[in-house]
Image (spheres, rainbow, N blue to C red):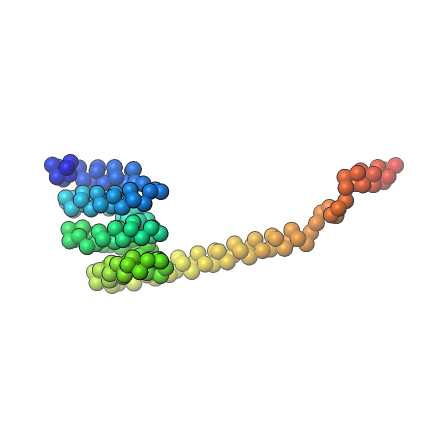
Amino acid sequence: QFVEKDFKLSDTVIRGLLKYWPVTNSSKEVMFLGELEEVLEATQAAEFQRCMVPLFRQIARCLNSSHFQVAERALFLWNNDHIRNLITQNYKVIMPLVFPALERNTRGHWNQAVQSLTLNVRKVFSDIDQVLFDECLAKFQAEEENQTEVKAKRERTWKRLEDLANESVLVPRFVSSVNLASTSESTTV
């Protein structure tokens, strides 16, 4: 209602929604996404540009939600013509923010409907700018390879530490403190 009276308030209202975004309650998250869609329908391009970065960071988190209704509701934002137009006008900022989430969904979300909707959204982005889409894909793949290397290095380091701990025992096992004390006394006498 605030935004309908004065569209300049949409940035403030959207930031307020983001500030109090539910973290653990998926039904509230679905409700927030619904409210967000209503606010975005009344939002003008200038106000949208002021809040789009934090907004689409949150939407990206919703896209990767394991709760299918949250992910599905976030993907339904692209079905709204006004919101899709706002996204299309600002795709150079928005695509890099949401692309990793979209790619993770296509590769491994458990829900088939979410995967299908994600493919549709990816197609929207690839139709807008194939070059930027390919750059985002290459960056995602490079980051994924880097994460795999870091994980493998971490596992090798822990394995080496475990092997070192098993090899070098400083105090022989099963030696009581009494025996240690008596051997140290006999050597000093």
